[in-house]
Length: 68
Image 1 (tube, rainbow, N blue to C red):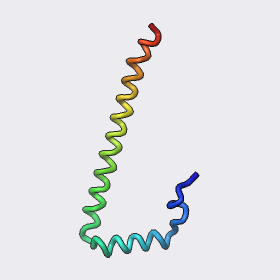
Image 2 (spheres, one colour):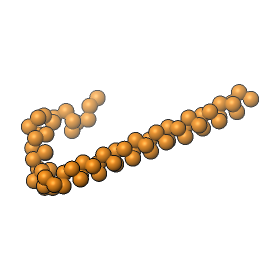
Image 3 (tube, rainbow, N blue to C red):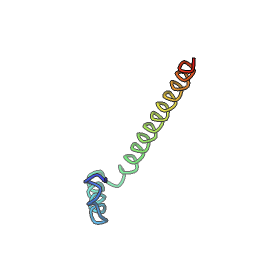
Image 4 (cartoon, helix red, strand yellow):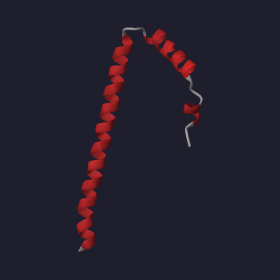
C-alpha cells in the first residue's frame, strides 16, 4: 500500500516544485535550507538509534528475570 501523495508525482511535478522552491527561497538560501534539513534528519536518526538501544537494554534486563 503506497501513500496517495507519492503515487501521482512525476518528473514534471518534481521540476515544478523545484522551480517554486528556487523562486521562493532564492539560489543562495537553498544550500542553507538543505544543510538544515540534513542536520534534522541526522538528529532524528541518532534519536531513533538511541531509542532502539534503550529498548534492547530493557529486553536484556527483563530476560534474566523471566528465567528466574
